[in-house]
Structures are given as structure tokens and as C-alpha cells.
Length: 444
Ligand SMILES: C[S@@+](CC[C@H](N)C(=O)[O-])C[C@H]1O[C@@H](n2cnc3c(N)ncnc32)[C@H](O)[C@@H]1O
Picture (cartoon, rainbow, N blue to C red):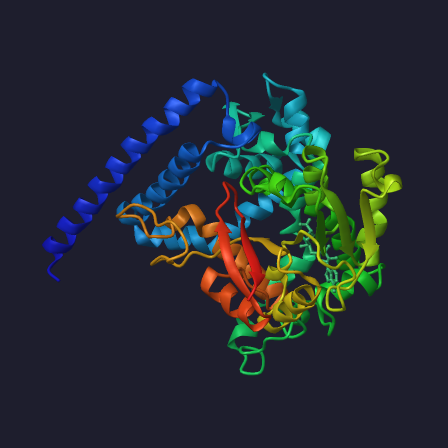
């Protein structure tokens, strides 16, 4: 195609994107005026605000690719891990908490260095790269404050632990070995969770779950992940729990039993138990998580365990499901950790325990292909049907699941294949105003 034609197409796309930005900025500002706060942080964005947020993010990302120098963009992608590792360093040093205590004035670099123990010159470099990306702010030379983004992490150990999970040796080591794992003929087509970049990185034959459960705790990598994981899972839940609670009709389950399969410490059920007093709960997981769950439940909902409204039980989800005919079996952040065959095995055990009224609720990210899916709402043109960069983090998470477990974030079509093999079908996808949504499965 001649260059002038190409440029006229680009100009048309740019104008359409700017129109989207103008139109949806109006939606956002109207919501701000109505709420007079940041509804997207304190609670749940309205459906209109959620849609406007993802259109604006997608449009900004497309504008950058359209207008910017491609070489700069490539350089930025190559170096993007330095941003997450810089943020990770400041979190481990407690920077958001220190800045929050000094609001609104902020903290001088010298004082921040003294409190964190990071050399001043180096700390300033970390802070400035993060300020340039909007994560902190330099209000006057060498004075730093939180922004609305870093403030989410202040005084919030679960959110910080979740953020730092991706900077642990377990994860960064696996990511480092992804290219060699995918380029090696022996591992590139493997579907086992014991033949991934994680095993190459950590010179083990065990899966991450086996290492967390049974590995040698004197290994710093194992000690770090064991320590951080339960809290990080609460943080991961925080990112999505308000929407997952609001965007599925939990009250319609009446006095039914909800089984949280691989429920960790049961943070999903904790949120539900506080809001739906008629529901009963069973939280199932491996021994390490169940041990950690007991004091959390006793502190959060005293009496719930003694009364029998909530049961915490040790259960391996590859074995026969002990709770029959439950109203719902939840799998939150579970299937993405496993290859397809393992997912079918997990679902088959639940299928065997279900009655026709039971449902399985899969709460995971739903991959939306760039050209769209008949199951999911498409973005307005000229955005990619999957909202482009607004949802890029889902693809990034998919790749981290691949590196660690040969797991996958799945599209509705991929999930359907796995469900059918287990004698199940997709009843409905409940699109939630969160990174994850709920896919409801019923017996075939
Ligand atoms: C990503 S976490 C999700 C935890 C919880 N569903 C949540 O949303 O907070 C995955 C959980 O699966 C559990 N798990 C791994 N293998 C398991 C198995 N074979 N049986 C039961 N739970 C298992 C882990 O212990 C961990 O708590």
C-alpha cells in the first residue's frame, strides 16, 4: 500500500480514537461529579464507569502505538521488568506506608533513605523511574509522595504481598527461563506441570505446589514463597472480591452450601459469609493453607467454625469430593494453575459429587482473543475487540501461569472443551467488573 494511503488510514484511526477518548472522558467525569470520590478504588465502579475505563485505557494504548516511535516502544517493552522490580524494591522497603504517614507534605529523599535503609542516590533513581510512570510523585525536588496508585498499597499488607509475589525468586526465576524452555524441543510441547520454566530455573522435578507443601524450608526461594503466598492470595482476592460478590446472584443460593475448592485460607468465602448470613461454607485445601485459615476465620467471624456454619477441611481436589449436592462449588484462581488434562480431572471429581441443581463457579481471568469471542462483549471500533492494552495484563498473567505450571488463563471456547470432557457445559458467563469473571458450569 502506498505510504500516503497508509498515513491517511492512520489519521482516520487516530481521529476515531480521540473521539472515543472525548466521549468516554465525559462518562468518567460525570461519575466523578456524582460520587465526589474515587469510586473505582473505594468500592465498585458502576457498569458505565467500568466500560469507560477499559475503553480509555485501550484507546490510550492504541494511540501510543500509532503515534510513537516504534523503536522507543520496543525499548520500553524490553525494559519493562525493571519497572516492576523497582516497585517491588520500594514495597519491600515499606515506601508507600512511610509516605502515607507523612501526607500531605511527603518525605524528603534523605529521610526516606534513612527509613528504608536504601542508599539515597539509588533510592532517588528508583523513585524517579516510578514517578515518571505515575506510581509515586516528586512534588518538589527530592520530596516524594504517594499517588492514587501507590496509595492502594499503603497500610495494605495483603495487596503489597500480592504485588511482591511476582518479584519472588520463584516467579522471576521461572520467567527468566521461559525462552529456553519454549525453544527446547524436549519441553516446548509438554503439558506436564513438572516440565516448565519453573523446574528449569530452580533445578527441581517438583511442581510449585509440591515445593510449597513439602519442600525444604531452609531453601530461601521456598521460604520466601511459603511466607508470602497466603497473604498474597488475600491480596489477589481483594482485587476482585467486591465485583465477584456483586456481579453474581449469591442470594439466590438461599441456605445452600458453598464449597470453596482449593479455597486457600477461604478469603472468597469470608467476604460472602459476611454478606449472606444464610449461606453455609466448606473451605477445602491442602494442610498448610487450612492450618493458616483457622486463626483468620476465628478473628474475622468469631463463632463461625464452632457453630458449624463454616467447615475447614483438608482435601486434595484430585480425589473424591466429600461434599455432595452442594449449591455451588467455587474454583477461584484454581484452573489457571493447571494444564488442561488436570483441569478436566479436577472438574470430573466435582461432576461426580453434583446434583442437577448444583453449579460449578469458575472464577478466573477470561481470555478474550484480539478479534473477539461470541461469548463476550466486544469493544467499539477501532479498538481491538478485546479492548487491547486495557486487558493486556490478562495475557501477561497467562504467560506467568505458563512459566510456573504449564497452566493457562483460558478463553470461553477453551474452557468449554475442558468442561465438556468432564461431562459439564457452560451455562452462563457472568462478566464481572474485575480482572476475573465467573463462568457457571452445569451437568451436561
Ligand atoms: C492460587 S491459590 C487460590 C486460593 C483460593 N482459591 C483463593 O482464591 O484465594 C491455589 C490454591 O490451590 C491449592 N492447591 C494446590 N494443589 C491442590 C490440591 N491438589 N488440592 C487442593 N488444593 C490444592 C493451593 O494450596 C492454593 O491454596
